[in-house]
Length: 390
Image (cartoon, rainbow, N blue to C red; front, side, top):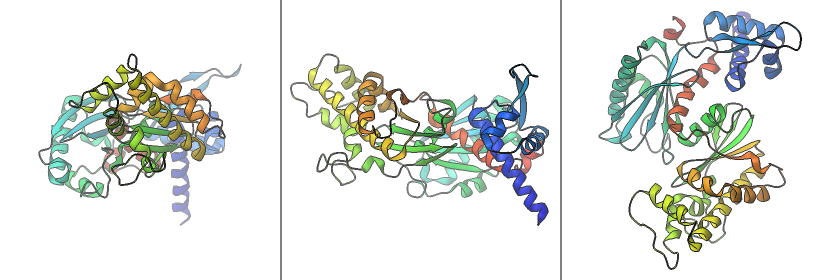
């Protein structure tokens, strides 16, 4: 029992060290001790095991105010590789990444039956992974896990009739599969590579056809349940959920485009994809007073809605992401910031801490690849057999 307890403590310490390196690396041993709360001897013991294992490497030297230069340490990006999967309509986009989330290759596989047919998903995913490994020259024993991002409208328990365990069994690769909602994946990738990097607590809002939000703290993301269906205008516009006055009815692209049809004196496109329609509306705000009033009102609603999140959750940063969020924020971020900081004034978040997302290109794919890295961090040196044998 004592030996097992020692192993549990060691793995826990390794997980703390890896988490600190993942979030803020490279770091020295002294900085790791401060970041984790572990004693210098516990940090050194963890580092020794992780370096011997190959998961951590030296990453240069740093000045130490007159003393010997400090050795910096970081996660070894080539220790293993992860697969990120983004589900887009009837297709899988499958990417191979190293542990620093650097993208190496991407392939695409069609799904004739969509995500409902787990046998087809497993077959096409397996073909795609083998193709990726062939293109990159990476052996399958170097894979540490697979992360899958579900579309915002999906739920792990409702929209797809399969689980990560079932998919692991069908793939037969002997590595874990992680499934997560797109909004949580965006939050994770913004905290690792984007606008929320370097802070311990942030809220990431995703605005597309609908709206969602996630709280990311210490490397873990948690969806803020049904934030888009909280009330921002009592008795206001109808929402597709059946209620009235929901945030999504005013802030989501579907609601914005529906309101644009009611503008007097000007017709906006009713056909074409939603991105182009919203881009036309936002662009028209420069020369059309009615369009400008609508978009500015929407910016105010966004600011008020995220200001409520600021008041409730006290984040160090609030990040606006998603294709519609980027379209609106690129033109009207000052108005959004003003409304957000006025609504959340008791928390005292500065306007500069309300930011646009910085990882929009392939954010879901990259974020999905983060999931196995987080799983690796939690395990420490308790690695899958195939990886531990490298």
